[in-house]
Structures are given as C-alpha cells and as structure tokens.
Amino acid sequence: MTSLVYLLALLIPLVCMGLLDRRFRLVLWRAPRRAVIVLAAGIGLFLLWDLAAIAAGHYRMGASPWMTGILLGRELPLEELVFITFLSYHALVLWGLVDLLLRRARRRTSSVIREEAR
Image (tube, rainbow, N blue to C red; front, side, top):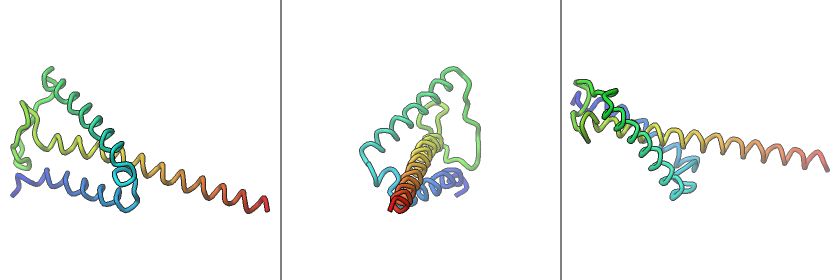
C-alpha cells in the first residue's frame, strides 16, 4: 500500500480541484473544449520538457518506497504525468478563479456607478 502514497497524494488534490472547478464553473464546466485543448497543451509542453531533461541526463528518477514503480518511459514514472496534469489543471483553475473574481468586481462596480447616477 505504501507504493500508492505519492500517487494518492497527487490524485486527491487533483480531484478536489475538479470539484472546485465544477462548483464555480471555472474551466472544464465553463468551456470544456477550450479547457481540454489548453490542458493538453500544458501537459504536452511539460512532458516534452521532462523528456528533453531525461535525454540530456539532467533528470533521473530516484528510488522511493512511496512510488508505484510504474514507468511510462525511461526515467519517467507515472507520478510525473499525474503531477504535470495537476500542475497544468491547477494553473487553469487559478486563472478561472481570478477571471470569476474580476468579473464579479466589475459587475459590482458598474451597478454602484449606475446607482450613483440615479
């Protein structure tokens, strides 16, 4: 069971991020097609970055009892792909949250201006 600890430590916040996204319609539940394209682009970019670092010898997977041991490629553990996915999705959800807060602030400001104009 300890070999799943790191994977679960990544999946649990990823699921929580999805619940927040769904509740406030920040990314995937607001514009699913666009969100999936941007998410795939982020994952692809970070994956290429990792693969280039592995090929150049800058990145090596260490041995850990907390990891599953499942490799997707040479020196590329499953947990790295889940981490990249979490990182990319996290950035999108934060972007969506900031956008939501700015839209709400603009609406409040415009309603106050309209009230003052009366």
